[in-house]
Image 1 (cartoon, one colour):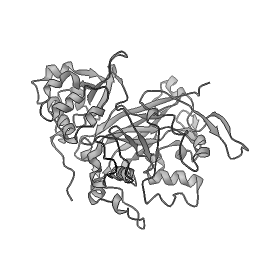
Image 2 (spheres, one colour; image 1 turned 135 degrees about the vertical axis):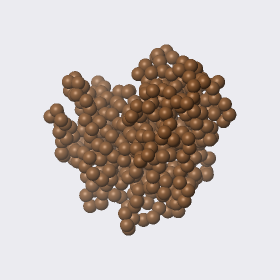
Image 3 (cartoon, one colour; image 1 turned 90 degrees about the horizontal axis):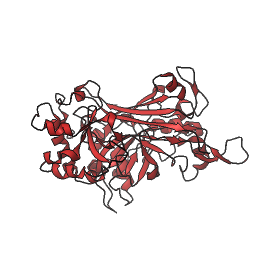
Image 4 (spheres, helix red, strand yellow; image 1 turned 45 degrees about the horizontal axis):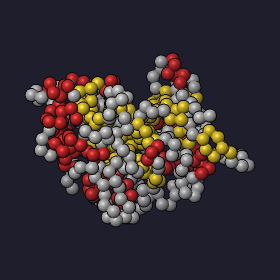
Amino acid sequence: MNAIELDATHDPALRSWVGSANVEGTDFPIQNLPFAVFRRHPSDAPRCAVGIGDRLLDIGMCIELFDGAAAPAARACRASALNDLMVLDPSAVSALRAQLSRLLSAGHERDRAALGEALVRISDAELLLPVKIGGFTDFFASIHHATNAGRMFRPDMPLLPNYKHLPIAYNGRANSVRASGAMVRRPHGQLKAAADTAPRHGPAQRLDYEVELGLYIGAASTPDQPVTVGDAWRHVFGFSLLNDWSARDIQSWEYQPLGPFLAKSFATTVSPWVVTADALAPFRVSAAERPVGDPSPLPYLHDARDQLHGGLRITLEARLRTQRMAAEGTPPVTLSRSGTDTLYWTFAQMVAHHTSNGSWLDTGDLLGSGTVSGPGADALGSLLEISEGGSKPLTLPNGEQRTFLADGDEVTLVGRCEAPGRVGIGFGECTARLLAAAG
């Protein structure tokens, strides 16, 4: 079975004339080149850019440097969101990335002056929501999270009978997706604890985060024509960090029989950076091995190449900084470290299942992986799991305790790819602070 093809943009020896891109451990070496949307001042129109080291390259300021298949892709970057770029044939996006790599490489001197004029310090920019999102679907692809969560409610049957047969998901609210840095307000909802005789309405008390990876659809699929697992990656533009905020007490009362609603629809935070499918090619791995005795996927969910190369090796971390820690100048504490290579379902299987009934995916649609948890206690992607449903408080290094989030808490997700012989790449940060409920 053919391996994933790599090209000159993945060369581990490649270096950039932008010095900060060559610093060990940077998220944005020249091998990455993630896309983002920014503005320098609140009155400015948003602009599309690519990350390189600690800089943004404003592509619209140097369009004349691009030719061939990369030229229309560069022109698409004059828009205020990435959608105009994402809708293009993947080959055009690859051509743009290849020319960006050559222009920013250490050996390229001719256009440095023009490119230098188009560079902006990331610290001087306001990073915005990168994509105009039309639809948001959140999956439940981590069997470890599904088992941990299910065990709290169904000790004798943590996984429902359908879990190992199809990728479970729910449709969320696209207009509640916001960029990293935007505050999240504690929601109100209908609540009913086990000891309550009747429900009441008030602020959620069991606020949680979920460590996820988000997938952005590039080329739209065709109505009534399901996407096969083998063709799914042709529709993948790139990936971002995603935190699907969850009100567990609202969720536990409302979710039967139709699933999540107000417990999830109040906020979802995504990182401003979109790491392209091309950049992730060196970090493609085999799909997670299924335990002996698990059912094989039905034919429409199986592809031999996807089983060999459909996984992604991305390490995701969740970090918490309480209001007290911030006041004392204490850095965030890492709560978990998990990997997307443990997901039970691949992203191609998610895309294929999503379209299998004849519905279609549009450019800019966002698909979440669901909470990414691993098999160990240090790889639990939510406080629901860490505190075992609130029964075991987590003690932080400064002595504070948490079962769920308190007002003023700030949650940050980070992600990184590493592989032997490759330059590591990162996803930036996905950060938001929780505000008290309104009123």
